[in-house]
Image 1 (cartoon, helix red, strand yellow):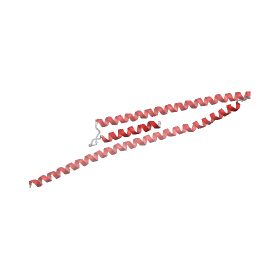
Image 2: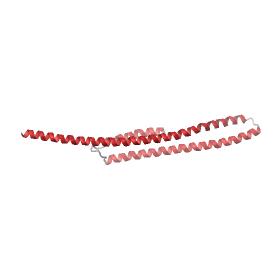
Image 3: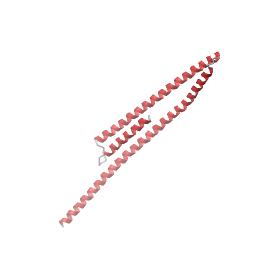
Image 4: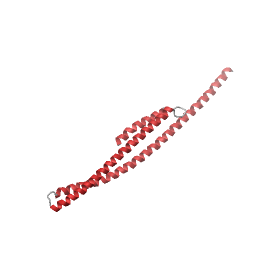
Length: 171
């Protein structure tokens, strides 16, 4: 899952830079820019869905494994009781296996909690990413507006200077 996220990051960064570099100077998005934005967004959503799907698969496998382990623990417990009744020489080996199963069960619980914690952290990081991305788009839009306004003012000043030069020529 981490590798998938690392693969997503360069693709999204590249698409974001392409969108940023293709903005026109008047501060509006062209159809091509909108299509690239939509494409980037759909790609991002598809990756999100894929990540969610993989997380669900891992969670289902984990729960299935926990269920199998619990069933196996019960089965071994029954076998142990039968063996104790027979005073079989395998009693010690069964006890060792049971202790190992108990140890695995103890290890599974914190792993499940860690998985839930990582999911929460992922969602928080994704939300922060989306907020920063929105902020970036707003800043780019503002930059384009400032550049456009600056160009208009410079052109107006150049026209005034040009008229001034023509007036001095006629005199």
